Image 1: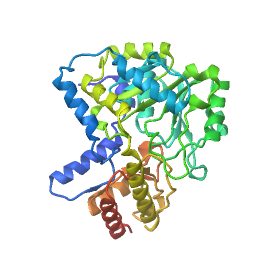
Image 2: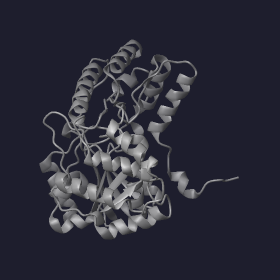
Image 3: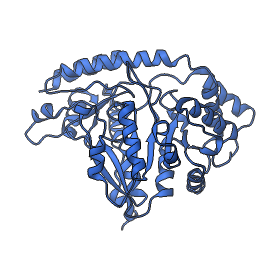
Image 4: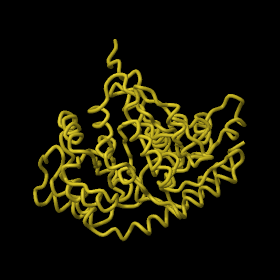
Length: 393
């Protein structure tokens, strides 16, 4: 008996969640697992944000809110966006959703028709193609190269463009590569999208996490003014403020698109939780003095991990400029397991023999790679590197 709809035949479970769950199963069996899988900070949510959530509950702020979110929070998101991206934004340009993932889902469901094509540079966050498929669209994968720091070139986009192309997805700083698009490269891409009258989704959830000389830029800032109404910015506080469990994300776009997305949201989850919205308001209006320390910690962890990975046999790795991920090429290391061994085989080998959990690159559009999250302690990184050195052939 078939219990699922046909649309599920094209959608895969999250590879990140699957590997995290497998690591948890082994821990439950008594194994000591070093996990590099989770895409969330290991820091505690700052106290003033937690206090704001508790105070909201005590004063009875436990009811439904408007579907698009609390007015005060939308105004705060608009003010922050205006300051960061230097483009005027008002509350009418903002929707508050149950995580950045729902912002993306709302967009694809509101915009795509069957046959519409969506350009997605690879490597990509695993949910982009599957959300496109769920909405009836067709993901078109655009390869990028570590030789170009994983940044797509307009020549690559030209080759993928067809009359059915409707949307371009961008993610900088990026998951899983840690790539940060340089200003000139992003400006070229924004101009290209404008010439072809495409919608642009810019996933900027990691915008606070850039290191060294890298700098965050948004296509909303760099696009021609006449094209800004076709840009959706996806933002939130989950990565920057360690608020993943609060499940809150922001969409910033033209009011007409916000209205369409709110229809989808209104018939699925309705509003984001009132308690999380109160916490987010405190995060936006409160002190961010913890962020430099967190960025410094991520920088140390990144440098430690990359240095260690480069010393492992058969491993090559670029230096990520943002987010908290590394994507080493492990194809040579995998080949030592067997001629046909893949990144999935190597991930399973590391988990079973060394108790080190990673995520295969194949679901991210990066076969021959593994994704490591360095949102873990320096001691954890050291232990993980030592264990991998012991078992890699």
